[in-house]
Length: 97
Image (cartoon, rainbow, N blue to C red; front, top):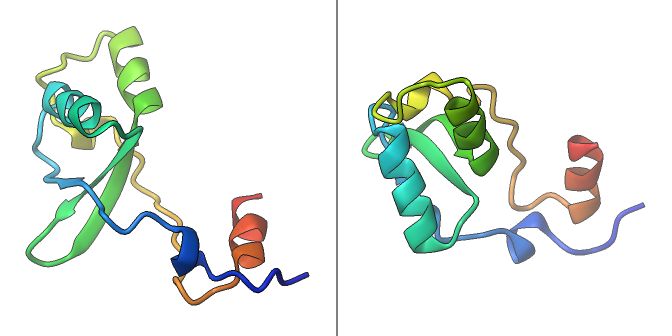
């Protein structure tokens, strides 16, 4: 059941990325400053995505008493599922489900 709207038409285009060694605290600070709920983790020069960290990941880290000076790579989600911008929005919905 295609909807005729492409993922690229509705996706965020201004991505915020940090390196895997960035501290949990610094990531939380950046996310707060930018008003975002997640941040991509990777090697920007190589355009290599290593993971994604969300507000939930940071809250869980605090609850587990992980030091906020620890690298974000310690708490990020490493298995990131992606979809091409040219795909129909319905395909993204099916993938997320």
